[in-house]
Image 1: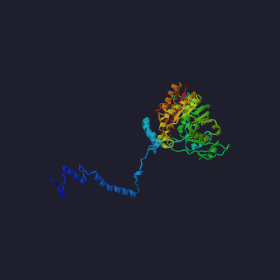
Image 2: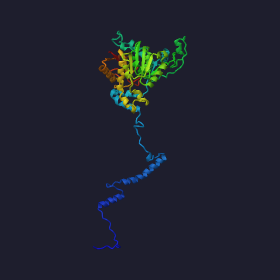
Image 3: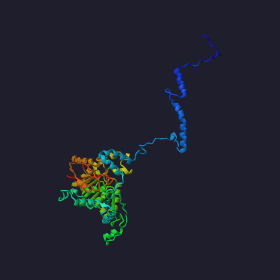
Image 4: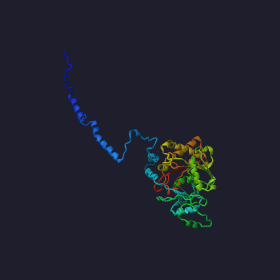
Length: 452
């Protein structure tokens, strides 16, 4: 073997590569991929100037880049909802009511989202004749008196000589003024204005003294009228109070229907109950503003669990009004406060039909055999309306052997069709649906009679 001299340095020949390897090396130097396109590294080099220009422009406009260590993800579920409760309510209604009402839903939807109409319930404990005259000057009409008068003057065919059944009778002495269909006028809020006592003054002269006054403090120191959804008066009218009745308003707050019950003058004893103490506080304020002290003393206001009323006072009352908690459809579309479609109240909303059945069953158990109960909600949902009535009747028949009969309210609907728009396909009871020409409701009510 030949020895190599350490001082002898020979140049090492470069390694030889194949043609494919030489082609790949050349492409990499030119910044090309195997397909002939430019490589990702080349794209990054070309994009760098563009990114520098964007950052410079953002700096001149005023945008500040947040350092990475300060960046965070928003926790939607725990900090802020993606949609407000009113929007969730509308989505829920679109899914359910479009199936329930079909072609009627678009017009109901628009009406629910529009401004609501109100009625003015005249306070009979004030100078009601003077108040009625002032409201008539505003072109408002007493829809209750108009309906009763029209029914008496033009009875249905075949019924001219037969007296009306007792179940057809409306609660008496109620006066509620509304504006005509299509009239979007609004009543002014009730004002507390002193009206000096002039016993010797003729009524016509008293009315002419201040014709522009819309609401005053009456001679008993109470307000002259109460603004409410006029459809809310229908359950009280359907209850058909008679003089000397003992009456229970199981879910009384905030107090509009309780006030209407007192206006009839038929309540020998009235129990007004609501589980929420804050809501009974609102009820007390309404009573103090509209009812004289002597009448208020006959009203028993309680905050008991209405589901247990059948155990507390069974077979006691002649008339019971069960205006249950519900989804309050119109309120849920306009108000975020106390909205039952809030995410935190999902379970409460799902349990509403069960609560409503329990309350209606308690109201029927508290009624004397032969007495009447009116169940009402301000919801369009048949799950909270007809299904609750039918389920409660089955429950009482199976567990208590109590027979309940649903009263036919067809005559009642015909009386008030000039003022309200009724849904024509209710299985039991009646439902007032919002309409742009008569934007009252929604209000569902069903009258029942306990037979045993």
